Structures are given as structure tokens and as C-alpha cells.
Image (tube, rainbow, N blue to C red; front, side, top):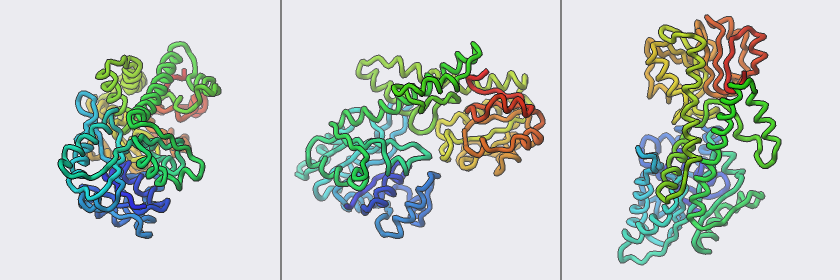
Length: 437
């Protein structure tokens, strides 16, 4: 089938590349000309395992193309996947201006029946608002259309696999015509046994927010348990293991540490709190999860201050700048707050990340007190403490004897519980972790 994807961001690119991979002909509409030029060369502007390979495959096969021409994109196919950004406003509510713009432009250029499929993360009721906008701007033109909800459930670092081998595909539709089209689009995936759930649009919109905020709450819960473990001499890793054996709970997302960041969980939690409040629903549990998450970085920095006493003039190495491994995304990453605090206290920072350094440089310029390195061992030379802020696999495999010899003081503050305390103690490190005495 011919498909149009509007928005060449994270969700849009993964959606387009994967649809092209399973056999559809896809045209991506992206506003930024430089980005379109880059994509047409098969170069991905974001790091996501497997994505660039799929982009090049799609371009080579002729099933994938990019354009800045919205009119061309809308006329290209009868199915438009809306994958634009919905960033948070200052009050936490989602900014839907880009979604509204797509609705207006679609009405302006609509030449025949269209199925507008919203993949952006949006508050419940957005499908209804898109429908109303289309009707208003179509005016007297009697052109049929449907609006559906098809939320994405992509984990950064695993997005290609999540799209092609999903836990579930959710579509919110109002009639059989829209359902039939979406079933046909996803047939190459559902034929392999992956489930497709059909609901009405409001239910589909809520499923997305409910899923993300539940995961955020689960992470905050285990971090609360980590705080308790530190007070009483428990081990949060063992607690999580004991909980995880219970099939009703499961082991996933029970990793204590610096909490959640990135483009989804912080934004979606704030937005869902606002949605609940607007509807008169008590969101205390989500507010609690948010508060616990906000406390993670101060707790890590307190451990550092206890270890070094005074931060001014101290050299601190950092391993990990991205909010999670296997991505270059630093949005809402704990590292942003950590580096800001260290620099404000007069510390010297030596930072390393396998993928996120260039993005970090856009916020924190390199200078006398902040140096970036392309080698993790170079970063720890002369350091009086090493902070682990992202659980990249290469950190777990690091030569810690070499690290100890390179550091001025053998102190590690592990914000992701990458290492075993007893092993670090035997190697001669002063080791602090999260929720383990």
C-alpha cells in the first residue's frame, strides 16, 4: 500500500522505515530541508540500532522517499500517519499545535478520501478535535475522511524490534472501513502472530498514557524501596529479584537507579496528571511517582558529596550522558542536572558517552572545567570520583583495575548499579550504589 508519514522525527522515521521494510511504499513529509537531504542519502539524524540500515534498504528498493512538500504528501496516499511532536507546555499539558496544523493542511489539500492515523502521543479527546478541525476547514467540500488512533510503543534503543515484533498493536477506530485499512497495513506483522487490539479512539489514546505512566510508577516504586534498603541495610537488587518471580509483578522495570528520563515518560507523566486533573480524577499516585523520580539526582549527588566532602576544585569523571543505553537521546537525562550541579559547585568534569557527546555539547560547551572524551579510560585519568549515569554495556565490561590505576582516588558512585559491591571492594574501590548497603 501507499502510505504517507507526516513528521520525520524519532517515531516518524522508525514508522516509515519499518513500513517500507515490510513492503509498503512510504513518503515521509519533513519540514526541515537539510534533514530531508540527509535522509535521502540514507543518513539517520538520530542513533537507533538498525534504523539507518532500514532507511538505506528502503531508499535502494524505491519504497521510501522524503519530501518537504506537504501537498505532495497528502495527495500521495489515502492513509496519513501523523507522527509530529507533542512537547510539554510549561504547565505539563501537551502542546498539540503541530497536530492541529496537520489537520488544517490535510483539509486544505485533501483530494479524496483520507484516513488520518494519529501516532503522536496525545491526550484523550484529540481524535475528536482533529475530526472537528478537518470538518471546519473543509467547509462546503464534501470529501469523506476518518480519523483513527494508533499509538506507538517504541523503546529507544529497541525501536525497530518493537515495531516489527510488537507486544501489541492498538488501533482506535470508529467504523469498519478504517479498521479494514489498518488491518491490511499491519497484516505483514500480524500474520506472524503479533496481536492487534481494536478499540474506540478514546480508549486507544488512554492506553498509551496508561502504559507509560504505569512503567514510570513501577520504576519510582522500586526506587522508593531502594531508599528503604539503604536505611535498613537491605539490598534492592535482591528485593527486586524476589518480587520479579511473582508473575503478577514481573521483573521488568524493577531496576533501581537514577530513575526515568527521555522523551516519553517525563512528558507523558506530566501530561497525564494534567489530563486526570482536568477531568476531576485523583492523580496522587502519579504525582508521587514524579516526586520520587525528581529526588534521584539529589540523592546521587549527596553520595558524591559524602565521598569527596567538598566538590569545588575536584575532578569528577562521568560515564554515560544519554538517558538510557543504545541511544544518543539526552532529553530529560539525569546527566544534565548532574553536570549543571557539578559545574556550579566549581568541580572539573571529564565526560564520556559512546553516542551522546555531540548532543550534550549543544547544551554544555566544552571549556576549561568540562572536557569530553572519545575513550572512557582517558576520561577517568586523574579523577577523584567516577559517576556512572547510564548503564551502557561497555561499562560493565570495563577493565576496572586499569580504571583504578588511572584515577587519583578510587571512588565510584554508581547511579545504575552496574557493578557488584563485593567485587569493587576487593578491587580496592570506595563504592557507592543505589539501594545497596
